[in-house]
Figure 1 (cartoon, one colour):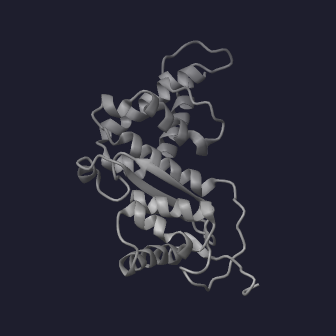
Figure 2 (cartoon, one colour):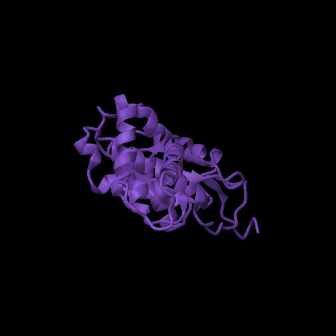
Length: 242
């Protein structure tokens, strides 16, 4: 039955009324199509209808999905095509990045809750230790499909980074484009768990600029934006604020 539903190749099956078996395939095909169409709206919009239909049909007939959970089907769809290098074969070099990015939006939205540290909302970006939202992932992509239309992103192959995170109150997933330096700053602040003033000279060396007012302004703008967007939740509770 499963093989017929995937391939459409009819065969005699005990217990199935002749002439009705196609209804099973139609119902299952509709579920798969609807699930994938909902999971990958950007990919659907970027491809021609025939290209999208080919991706779905190849997966449906050859992928043999393993998960019993419908919401995980998009991950198997991504894995199937990445493993087969479908993007390269169809001359869609951005395909892996696009499917991965859209799957990770689902993954972060549905991921198990991560413990939130205690924090206060008021503090000093430079003098107090920052508390980051723990529910996030940073993706490295070849094409900036998260910030540019596919037609433009195709001309911009390189090292690109996307920050995806879940908002505390609503659970909605947000994303930002990051530079390699932005990623380094976020990573090191969390690794060291110290105030910005104690580590900002390291950022100056990495960026190749002199520590000074320009650096402070750039850091204040970047980290202040993360604070407004709730990627930074607030400030670590100190003895003075406890």
